[in-house]
Amino acid sequence: MRRLVPLLILVIGLLACYVDLMPGSKGLGSGAKFFTLSDPNSGMVQLDTKLGLDLQGGFEVKYGLAPGQGDPTSAQMETLRSIIENRVNSLKVTEPVVQTVGSNEILVQVPGATDPSQVESLVGQTGSLAFVLLPKAVYGDATAASSTPLPAVGTQMDPALLATAQFFGKQLDPGGVSAAVDPASTGSWLVNFAFNSDTGNTFATWTGQHINEYFAIVLDGKIVSSPYIKSTITGGSGQITGTFTQADAKQLATILSYGALPFKLQQEQTRDIPASLGQTFLNQTLFAGGIGIGLVLLFMLIYYRLPGAVACFALIYYSLAVYAIFRLVPVTLTLAGIAGFVLSVGMAVDANILIFERTKEELRTGKTLATASEAGFTRAWNSIFDSNMSTLITAAILYTFGTPTIAGFALVLMIGVATSMFTAVTVSRTVMRFVVRQGSFHRAWLFGVTDAEFQARAVGRLGRREARGRV
Image (tube, rainbow, N blue to C red):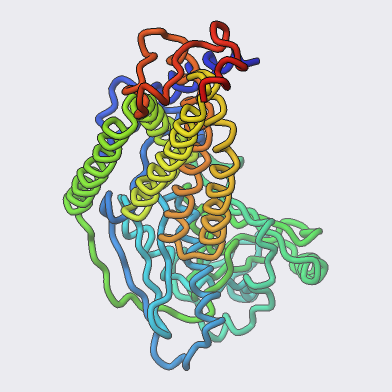
């Protein structure tokens, strides 16, 4: 099993380099797709570096409650925030941030958004859906032509007629709402819907009583479709048809799935965050992080010498592996996330320090280099495990209960700490085993101890009893 470890380390390292340095990539922050797991039109994810609003740019928009609606409670504002967050997340944008501001405002921040109007229209709609039977005396039915045309899509519904509605969006089952291609037309889309169990039977009875009659589907007071009832809709499920594009159908399905907003919103402020500003932040952050990591590597080389060089190799390996994981998950990198990564580098160094200090102590007791090295890793493991597990538990709590920014920091920290345990114990240990077998490295000064403290001969040439006798 031990012989397979170097092969495993090599394979993981090569895969990490492949993910990180795929030919044709333009580097971190370029926004380029480094490589694609499948055709993006298939709905599969693309493998790229995802950056947050502070590094990539984007836009933010603030909404406030329209006048005359009273003062919302904190629970109502949280419901409002949750619905908006679900709607924005349905667009598959990169880690949007939706948070309450004060007692009656919602701030939406969307990094890398290419169509702000899509987000604004999706958030702004209250999602109040109604099914309104159109008077047969006015519009006729599907079996006979009428001189009065059906209401056009997008027209405002007559308030008096809207008041006769018997079925509403709040009675729908969110799990039964979806957008799909309309098989009866070319290029058009439709929206599947299903009422909850309490309303399904009532809806079936209602449709059975009005076969061939037209009814309007009204969203926020405007007509989105005017189909007719072909037959009794059993089970409470049906379809909303019309001249829907794919984007229109998915937007309507999203609004129906995540419910109506409890309050009417009005846009108060919108602001574009230029990508150039995000690139400046990114450059500054990478520069600062590079200095910090560089100083850590320099300290390890100066103070621990040869083991420090092994630690530097392990840290470089660790950085490549962590960055590959960030892109595979994928993790959205923000300033806070990069800070979490730099902190996890410190945790990785801490593990190496524990190991090498323990190795020195073992050397000073008279053990050979190979024995002291193995004992250093074995006896430092408990301390490494305890410190890293406490960090992981804390990060998990932050990820579960923190704001999106804190959750991003915690996720990066958890990935970094978990990876550092692998590199510090497995990668460093494997490289050290190779090093101590090389006679040219058997020098006291390379390990930071004196010649009197150093036992360079291998265990095979110097018996354990003889080694103990030299203490």
